[in-house]
Structure formats: structure tokens, C-alpha cells
Amino acid sequence: MSAFLIYVFVTSITPGPSNIFIMNSTKKHGLLGAKKFILGILAGFLFLAILASICLYLFDEYIEAVEQTLKIFGFIYLLYLSYKTFTASKNDEIGDVFSTFKAGFLLQILNMKTLLFYITLLGVFIIPNSNYKPFVYMVLTIIIGWTCLIVWGVLGHYLKRYLNKYHYIFNTVMSLLILYSAFSIFY
Image 1 (cartoon, rainbow, N blue to C red):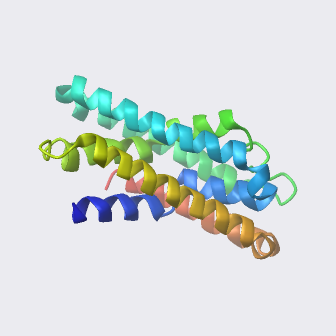
Image 2 (image 1 turned 135 degrees about the horizontal axis):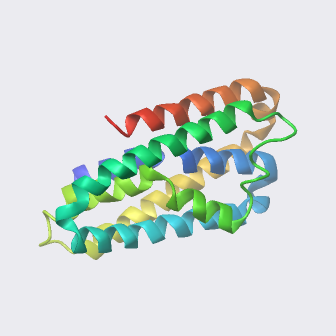
């Protein structure tokens, strides 16, 4: 159980597209202004947990073939997000685009890092340990994941004065972290 908890926490708290865009949205709109976007991401996280569980149980023998295709699409998507983050100006930030429930939900369900996270989680920790309650594992995963996503939002909100002052540096670092996420899909 400890390896499972460590995996979920480390994977959830490290920078990824959803974490970065939550931080960017709260930096731009504040916590209350970004709440719909954050709720969309949280709902997308839950949706992917359910979808990954169903898919892994129904299509276990096809997962490897599908996983490669998902990795390629996820890589391309993350390259696009990295570019948009890097080229966003201070007045025309991508936070404007990412401020609705729908945008948050779509960002999360298209986030291959999260889908691959759930496939790995189910394949490595939950299915082999089926004598434990899979439901308990998924509830713990969702609680830890949601907590980490909200932490990123709170950081964006409380650090916005500094993040706005160093806008170019912030966007460059966030863009590089998204780029790192893109390449880490394959390793």
C-alpha cells in the first residue's frame, strides 16, 4: 500500500498540464474566478478514473496497442500546449481560454498523462492486488489527486503578484515543464 500511495502522490503533485493550467488560471482569475475551470478538471479526473477502470477490465488484452496510440496523441497535444504557454503574452494569457468548466473537463480528459497514470495505477497496483478493495484504491487516488490539483490552484492564487512580475520567466518555465511532460510519456 505504501508504494501505491507514494506513486499516486508523486505523480499527482509533479507538474503536468492540468496542474500548470490550474495554476495559470488562478494566477489570472483568482481562486473564485477559476472555480469552474478547477471543477471541470476535477470532474475530468474522476471521469478518467471510471473510464480507465472500465477499459482495463473490458479490454485488457488490447491495452498495449492502444497505449502506444494514446502516447503519440498525448505527445502532440502536450507539444501544442507547451507552445501556447510559451507564446502567451501577459495581456493575452491562455488563462482566458481556460476559465470554464467545459475547458477544464476537456483539458483533463485529453490529458494523456492522467489516462496513462490510471492505466499504470490499475495495471500495477490495483488489478494484481485484487484481494484488496479496488474501490478503496480508486477513492484514495481521487482524494490525493484532487488535493494536489487544488494545491497548484492555491499556489497560483497566492503567488500571482510574483508570477505576474516575472511573467516571461514563469511562462518559459511552465512551457518547459509541459515539454518535459510530453517527452516523459515515452520514458
